[in-house]
Image 1 (cartoon, one colour):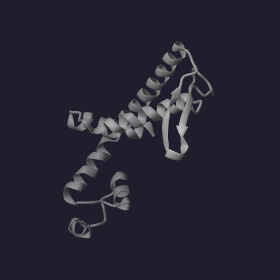
Image 2: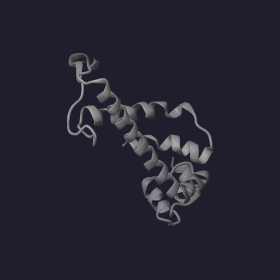
Image 3: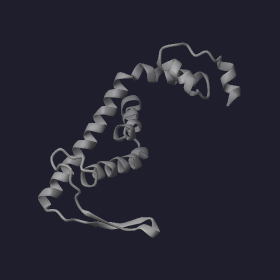
Image 4: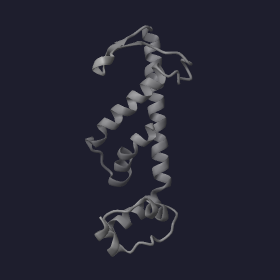
Length: 143
């Protein structure tokens, strides 16, 4: 999930050679997932299967009030380190996938230059190296 959230930013870096602010929400979501992995779901190698912090919520309002820390500054530093590690791993995973699959992405882009939209079947054909069966003229009027 975290690697998926970084796909757009990495595509900007690799293919457009620039970065925009469009990925800001993706970074926030990825960081929140990584934080929950470490502090709530016990998915940290260094901290083990424990929950860190005590979340206070107003369930009837559907929002969080905050989180009480029940751990030391040293543990907080480990939590931050683990979050950073998860984020970096997701980022590198996404970068590797996009780099290795560049030719398939380029093929999709070239097809989208000819037609306005492609469906799942056509996407599968392109990714698998087949020439799409749908003629270009039919695809523009099908949208």
